[in-house]
Length: 227
Image 1 (spheres, rainbow, N blue to C red):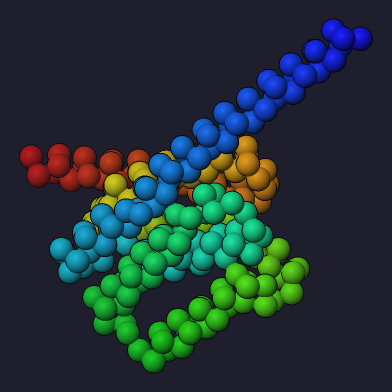
Image 2: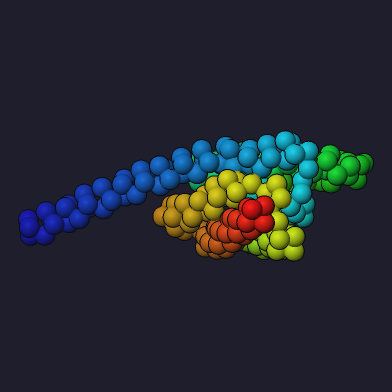
């Protein structure tokens, strides 16, 4: 009887140790993702500003990506998930907003309609974050993230494929994004086990890797043509 109790206590100690180890590991991964997120779009923004051009960038891709990031941020906030599992989206949302403004500016597309769409955007995502919308809408919103992410990446892949030129698309930005998705697959699986979020990270990570590969290929082709 005493031996059985000792074995049970030993198993509980092992489980607690493993649980603590997993939490520490996830927090380390999350920290690296957050650090990457702080600078995710900076290389892309710098590239656009330096060139005063958005050549190679898909505007529709950036818009869809911003919508996906915003849903991830507001859904996680509304669901009360640990801050470390989504903190980077706070910065990603702001950086994509700046990138959208730069694209509008350099393409002379700023208008009253742009301001109206920005107002609608802020209203909708505030309603998700603070659960002003009914719960079924908030919970259903996460199911839109994967299609939005896939279409945003597909739009960028289409632009690169058609132009056969990476233009001013930042390799660093998409490399960081790919790493972030892979890391988030691990932290989500271990901490929240949210299947919809997992599917989004897996699909987004895969497509980010495709974009990274295309940028590398087209840059190499450009170098060969120069020589």
